Length: 195
Image (cartoon, rainbow, N blue to C red; front, side, top):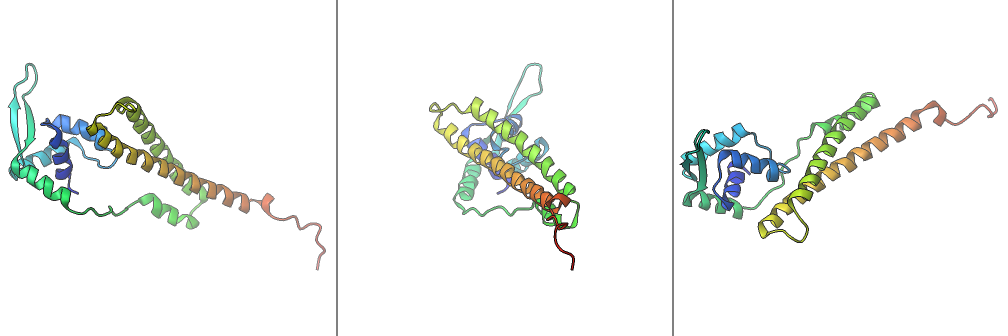
């Protein structure tokens, strides 16, 4: 998927400014797609040049004028083309997995620190998603559009929960290895007869 298709999807709901698109990315799309404001504005310019978007300038008092972007017929057609195309899983490129793969060749504490740092980050993201869930998605009172947004948030929640479970699995393994390798874990051979 290209960033353009994520922007087209956001604009299917309502015309929006670049700022509003960035805010929607942060609030609704960030669990599966990251984009900076610079990337969004750069993409909006390209998409307008391709004829997928048009903008209307909205004058604002005391602020710079605002560009309100909306889909053109060509933009809607591109969105439809993209939407009907089959999806493929995104390849995983995860440096922490490579570090864990190499764990037998480094001090266990190095692996532990790398995993603990990542676990902390995923725990923070999970808290953010849970806060969004509580504030934005009232049970039994969601619009149809909110229900679809909630489904994507649920994927983000599960992604973070899965990361936490995996990190805990690695940490448990490291604890078990440390216990097995400690001198107190070795059998007492003092009572065995000498040969």
